[in-house]
Length: 344
Ligand SMILES: Cc1ncc(COP(=O)(O)O)c(C=O)c1O
Image (cartoon, rainbow, N blue to C red; front, side):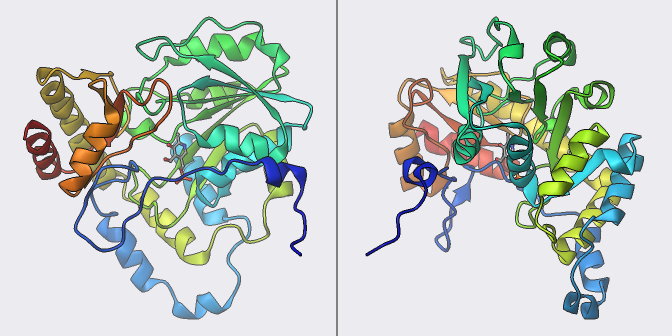
């Protein structure tokens, strides 16, 4: 007889990540990974890291990484929390601030992990529908909600919300924690760092998975007031970020000019793909991420047609999203292959 898990686990609908095919030659444009490799200096740092260090536990506080990020963001080390991918950081933020009786406010569509982690805690979720071009809806008084989470730029459309608009929301509800998920910020024209530095009820999260090409290493962070950061340190696993990841992360921060260049290629190709697909009659949202959302009315057929041609894009069989697919910006050659496959 199997042992009964908790009610939360019994009811939980788990997050479904995008396909990660092994073998078979796919052009993989489905999980917003970076098509370019991590900076060469990241590999060099990994080779030069003393092998003997692996015998020991890693730095539980990731001090080297935090010092480098503090300089980068002109912040204090005590305002930075390092996690095992920004998914872990988001989970810890929800866990630190949401009681089961409290409610998370979020928009739809957005990153579909948010409601899953709220459900893991047993918290309630209130969803506000975005406008038809991804614009923010009018919100009621947000003080009714304990946590408000928003990705900026926001997948799958890629809409970027101006910091001034988010600032008005943050200032209107000082008892609500505003989490601004900046996973795609390096592909955008602005950021909300200043809000996280200024408001004690705001924090940003960032990742090395997208612009730093380190999705496989699992590294993310939060930047916010010391209180928020201390609470995350209370909750985390003792050694949540492994030694090799800490080494690679430090090298990646130092390699900022390489990453600026690759982000610029991606931004140029995003403009190229947007224009090409619009010319083919698609509705393509203005995106500031490393992906676009393209609608032709029937996302499923498009997804299946492309998969047969060994090109993977992301399709959700969900209201609003089933009319199109999300396409990660790959290399220029990959995008040319995609456009040809769509035309065939
Ligand atoms: C909005 C958003 N936040 C966070 C993540 C996850 O980032 P990480 O790889 O750091 O866990 C993703 C991944 O696709 C994302 O789309």
